[in-house]
Image (cartoon, rainbow, N blue to C red):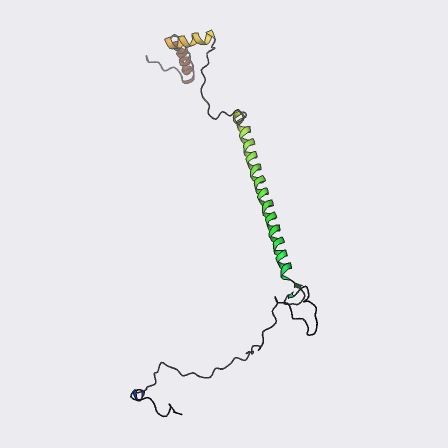
Amino acid sequence: MHDHSSHPHPLLAQLSLSVSPFISLPSAVTLPYNYQTLPHALPPSSTAPPPPPPGSQESPPVGYITSPSGLFTTTPEAIIASCQSLILHLADEKRAAEEKIREWERSIEERELMEKRRVAPGYLDTGVTMLTPVKVEGKTEEVRNQEKNDASGGGASAGGGREGEELDRMFGRMGMGL
């Protein structure tokens, strides 16, 4: 056998070695007082059925997922069924909540509609959304004569005189001949 440690390689023998101040050599580690060693074997799985005792031919027990306290055992099928029933319950709750919201919104709309009908009775029920002026053809003779007098100026002076008298009574006579 050939020993490599006693005869270094000729190229490596030509290199000079120096210790770098930036490199620290490994030192022994001091363990804390509360140090605990890990167990050599893993604990049994909580999701796998426990192995049957040796020499028995019976199937594993019904509930083989055990809670950490050991008081509750169940199976994956039972957990899946409870999750599905919870999903159905939450869907029912969501539908009920949406129905309550719709009823609430309908009651708000009905209250607003009743308030609008109170303010303007009959306006929403007729379907008329824009009021337009309507020309009335059946006027009485007295109204037509009054309109003709107003247009000719005869009725305006008489009406204007009465208004002037009322103004004079209220504010006093302010004549131009003072």
